[in-house]
Structures are given as structure tokens and as C-alpha cells.
Length: 212
Image (tube, rainbow, N blue to C red; front, side, top):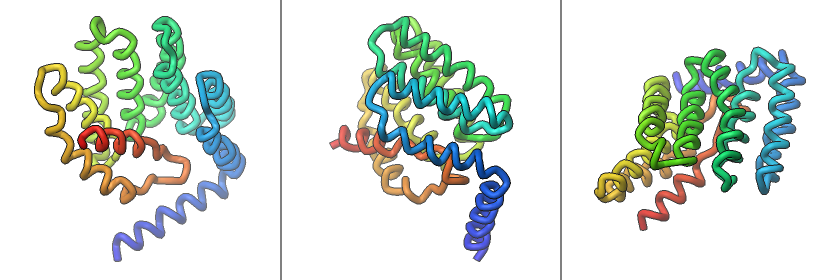
């Protein structure tokens, strides 16, 4: 009964929020689906810039900044040139830092910070591995402390643990049961609102396939 009441309360809160800020929800609702249309760096940059425009209007909302940073982090993983990778991450970093100030109790913010730090590491793993792997791990630790059920935080933790295992020459497949369990329960996690992040399931599917 408590769960039912809580679910009803969450729905009501979402509906009230939409009624109070119809323009914000309309803008976000029209922009978020465009993720599925992005094919390359230019597409994600254009989408990121749209989120930045929403953020400039809705200065009290952290989600537009989240998606702005997310787009630029994805761009860094798609780019081959190291200098360009870092330039995209420089843009993302500014939004990530603002997010931490605006929403320091949101687990999703620290998941994104960890994702950003992983992007920095990937630019030059040999030189940056030790520093950024530690920082990324700290960010995930904060995310899990805020919400241990967050599937993106759990996914990033599994990825880190597998990467560490490979580095030290141990079998990363020891973390496969965790990945399979996470995939099985992924859809049970319900975001706070339809605008909240829901990415990551495809990555877990990839991890599980790699375990076979």
C-alpha cells in the first residue's frame, strides 16, 4: 500500500510540475527524442546546443545542463583527435561543475561526472589513467551513496571494476554475474520524472554479451 501511495504521489508531483512549467516540459519533451536521430558529432553538437538554449532560459533547472554536458561527452568518445576530444570535454566540464552546484543531492549528476572523467582518461590512458580512474571512482562512490539503486551508477561501477581487473591481469568475467543481475532488474528502476536520464541499458547488454 505504501508503494502504491508513493507511486501516486510521484505522478501527482510530476503533473503539478508540468502544469507549473508547461513551456519547460514542452521544450524538453520536444528535444529529448532527438537523441535517437543523432548519427555523428555534428548532430550531437546541434542537440547539445539546443539543451544549452533551454538551460539559458530555465536557469533553475539542472536537467538541460545535464543533457548539454552528456552530448559533449558523447562527442568526445566519437572523435579520434585527442585535442578535439579535450575541447569537447572542456565544454562538458563547465556544465558538469554547474550541475554539482545546482543539484548536489542528485545521484545522476555524479554518474555524469564519472562519465566525463572517464572521457578525460580515454584521451590518454597511459598518462591519465591513475589520476582520472581514481576521480571517476570517487564520483561513482558519491552517486551510489546518494542512491544505491541507480542503474547507471551500478553500470559504471561494473565497467570500472572490469577495467581494473584487466589492468591487473585478473579475469574481468568475475563481474559478469553482477552485470547479468543489473540487466535483469534494469527496467524496475523508475526515474523521478519522464525527463530524467534513462540511458545505459544498451551498455549493460554489451557487457553481458561480452561475458558469453
